[in-house]
Image 1 (cartoon, one colour):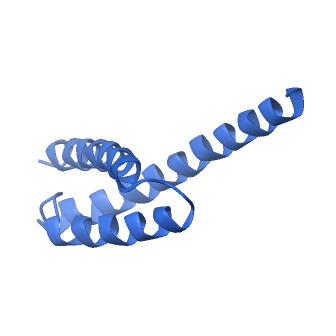
Image 2 (cartoon, rainbow, N blue to C red; image 1 turned 120 degrees about the horizontal axis):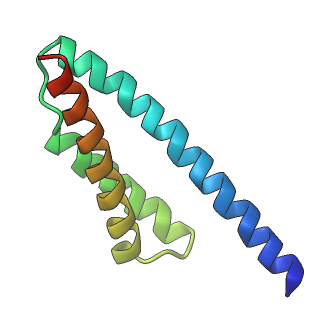
Length: 90
């Protein structure tokens, strides 16, 4: 059991690192969108990401509901970051 907990701890750390890398990419996109007057929310893009992620999640044994909740939370944070960038550029 100790080995499995250590594995989970390591995977959790990697998840946070990946989320941090994703947010850095979001900031770059947010700067581009702010400079080019593009709104933060791109609904069609989000729906496509969601569809692909649900499919990929199902292959990993993850429920569509779980993947949707996670991606919605990530997307909301990304929009918050982009909106902050947009308002700071005005």
